[in-house]
Amino acid sequence: MLIGKSKKIPSSEITPENVYINRREFIGKSAAIGASTSLGWRSSDFGGLRERRFFQKDWSKVRSELDEELTPFGDVTSYNNFYEFGTGKSDPARNSHSLKPRPWTIEVGGLCDNPGTYDLADFIKPGKIEDRVYRMRCVEAWSMVIPWQGFSLKDVIDRAKPSGSVRFVEFQTLNDVEQMPGQRYGVLRWPYIEGLRLDEAQHPLTMLVTGVYGTTLPNQNGAPIRLIVPWKYGFKGIKSIVSMRFLEQMPMNTWKRSASQEYGFYANVNPDVPHPRWSQARERRIGEFRRRPTLMFNGYADEVASLYSGMDLRIHY
Amino acid sequence: MAPAVWLVWRLLTDQLGANPIEEVLHRLGDVSLVFLLVTLSVTPLRGITGWNEVIKIRRPLGLFGFFYLTMHFLTYAVLDQTLDFEFIIEDVLERPYITIGFTAWVLLIPLAVTSTKGWIRRLGKRWKKLHRLAYLATTLGAAHFYWQVKADTYWPTLAILLIVGLMVYRIRGNRGRSWPQVLQSRKH
Image 1 (cartoon, each protein chain N blue to C red):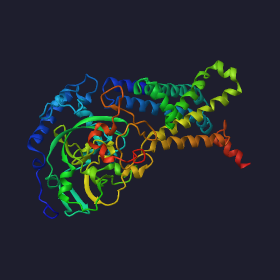
Image 2: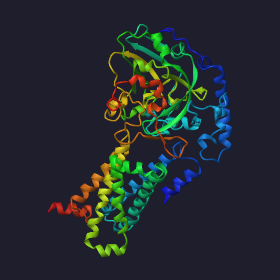
Image 3: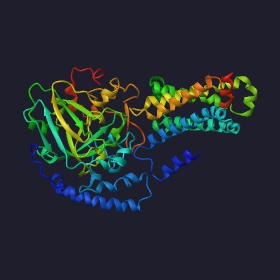
Image 4: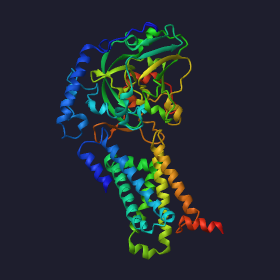
């Protein structure tokens, strides 16, 4: 749907019915458990296994393809980097209630045959929503294993039909200080911008995410729609996306602009290329005590290493 | 001891968040830097206000700063790096912000050792000179803080500005004189 025809979409149409219903169930259950919990290692994960049964599926049985356990829902939704709501890890969960993820429009532009401004539900229409369990490796050397719901970015790129000369895709986050109070501070340049090479964007692992643990994406995780590129550091996964543009030139992503000697455009997870200030050889998996070795391309080397053949990854960090 | 009690309380009541080791590490670092900054502020405070009793708390404040810095280092070495010395040594030698943080801790060890009355007597004038290292150590601590944040440099900048202010005050040679005295002496 192009602009002008903005018909209000009931949220039940955007969220699959079963997920929608389960969200209510979660709210009820978490209130009940919240009232009774006091023992255990962390109240945020409600004892770990129990909470994974909140949403329809029994998430306690779900594993990554490397047989890794999922990071508890409470940790995934309380430990976030989302500077639009503050620079502390718990700030996004505390402050992101001011974000209004519905109604939401996304602009598709740049060099393509089908530009336009879409309502969220129309934007995601070509996407085949599916469950995918991905590792998430932050550039700060911590990691999680997260069950996302979403679809391949390629599905919406195909609809837009980028021109032959296009080599890059650029994304922007919402720029609205009323909804994102952290944008009052010049910690980073707003709006947050990220980009991918077109072949990276079209890779089947690259995903637009609309849900986590079977529930609608919480605001602190980048509602209503965010990018996930599992072989790259987490900051590439731009949140609360409002625009997507097809370009010939490499876009300037926010963290590269902030400190280009530390954060590059590619930001592929690579244990052999340290951040100038710390090692990337190991990581702390949230919930684990001892650090574990970081895997090349975050464990997705078989799928993506060929994208970078012939490139010096020390230069293109 | 309130900060330590607060951290233990949060540990026991599960309020340290998803990454409790990082949380403890960072809060111990914050607390030790605050103690060191307050310690350095004592002498200028006495100079400005003429409140002489305040000097009595300088030693305990400095020792608390050292205590929390030691806890910060132990949290890093034992909990964060699980005593993997290969990685700890690499960090200390190759990561400048860790190098200077480690140096700050090492510099404060002789100051903590010589903080007793016996040592003050034994060292005489040299004691004062030796204890000026507190300025260097605190500056390194603030630089370590500044250097490890990703983009939000608000608090470390504030710490550095405070140190610069304190140093300017001391270098201008106002030691031991209150502001009224200083202003008086300028008029002549």
